Length: 40
Image 1 (cartoon, rainbow, N blue to C red):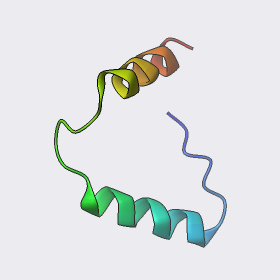
Image 2: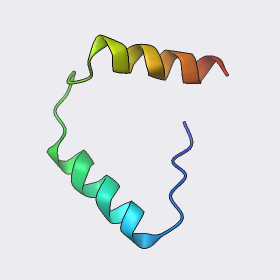
Image 3: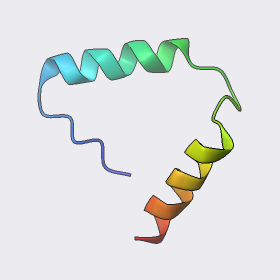
């Protein structure tokens, strides 16, 4: 999946979100979205 980050503030925001994430915390809807993106 491409991130689309093109400014340093985007990178900082993504790092903050990633640092607060927990394993297996995606919902079924989010997992399905990732699966659909993988197929494209």
